[in-house]
Image 1 (cartoon, helix red, strand yellow):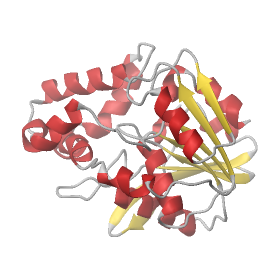
Image 2 (cartoon, rainbow, N blue to C red):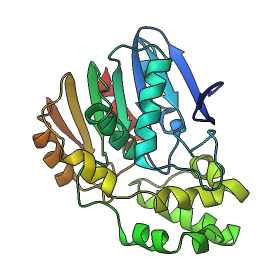
Image 3 (cartoon, one colour):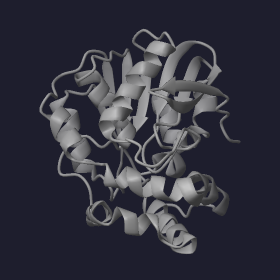
Image 4 (cartoon, rainbow, N blue to C red):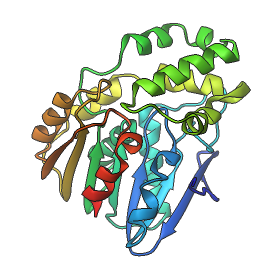
Length: 267
């Protein structure tokens, strides 16, 4: 069952879709690329049994605004996260983040002064080296990729997200993730996100890393080929995380391969 994003927050004239379920202490869920808040659909209902769960689609993702020349860089995403937490009136909430969402959280903490009670990071973009030859190629030829025939873009997208999973993704799941990235606004938005994923945003915050206030736990899939587990161990050491848990039988998109591992870690 899909999560409902029936609320809108306006951030710098951009409509940001968000939702909330449950009751109890607040927890904020932050997705990565090329996913959306729907990556939490098998996790949020379980933790909502004793928490108020906040989730949203980042700038240029999912049900949030997408448009030409939009700034979707990491610098904008941590500004959005900080603004949302202030808008929700949350004081040091618990945070759960994955992939580029983790970079937004870390930048929010070290650059914007964002504070939390507990932080759980899953296979996050956080240390260099980062990126891939594919990312570099898109940055050099963004317009060409944005103008691909729809069938070619669809095939590329399907191959990309399947590589992020260890299990074969069901057709309905592929379609769920693909839908926001289709059409006249969605397809170029996909390549815009890649083109603006500059490693300078990682370098800027990585030099600030130190022990964090609050409880910090890292979860890392053993079969992640996007961000190898050794990078997770490196991050855990630098920020002096309270725990580091490896997840067998899962690749980068742990939410699809092993959602129960995330729920267990949180509960």
